[in-house]
Length: 145
Image 1 (cartoon, one colour):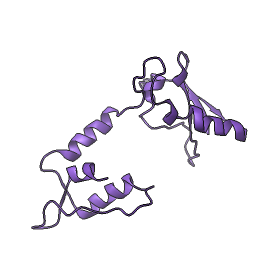
Image 2 (cartoon, one colour):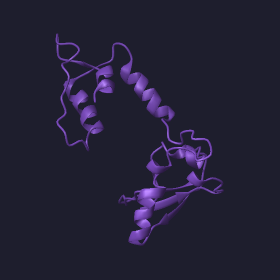
Image 3 (cartoon, helix red, strand yellow):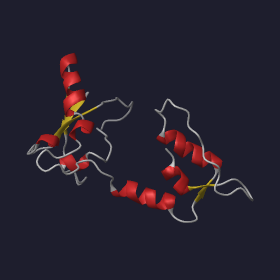
């Protein structure tokens, strides 16, 4: 576990816990876009500070109390801190646009990536088009649960 913050730390969610993983050959801290609102990060040269959590008790504390999932809402007014960023929204629109069809291979890649940690059986819906070849719509990816 690792604590990340961006100065100035003016509110509680501006320091949050993240799972750290070392990527060979990389010399930068990388993170998902979703928690950037909490840090007020806008990618114009923002400087972030990383603090490795060392003791097991502190790691458990960070995992339960300070992780990004536990800081979903602003304590002041309960507005959401995590949200979709433009790339995700645009991708969703492009995927579900009318007339967008996917081959079985592409459809399976998206479904399996979305449900990689699911332990239950994943039932695949029938294709939206059968002839001239089997195709699934982008909306079927979004509606799949």
